[in-house]
Length: 115
Image (cartoon, rainbow, N blue to C red; front, top):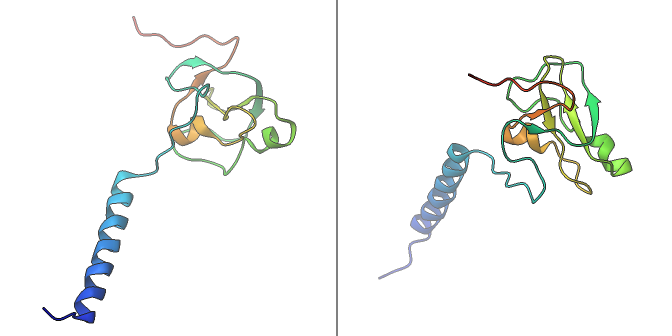
């Protein structure tokens, strides 16, 4: 059997394309870490970062949790439509609630429950 460079190149490029298609269909993966809010409706922890836009379960403004990077204090993002998402546990400062599409309940507000 003789080595065929064009077929080898096509094989490698096909494998790379297949991996890219699988990753695109699978979507982003953010496993978070211990202490991050994992369940919908848990209480928000820390100080609010009040933003001037509504949350619609999509990735929104890039890096709204950035103030947490500077001071290391736990925060959550409070949106204009009453929803909130949790920032990553310090020393991290990613918008994990937003990235994972998980909202938390603002302290002092009433959670909506179904009867």
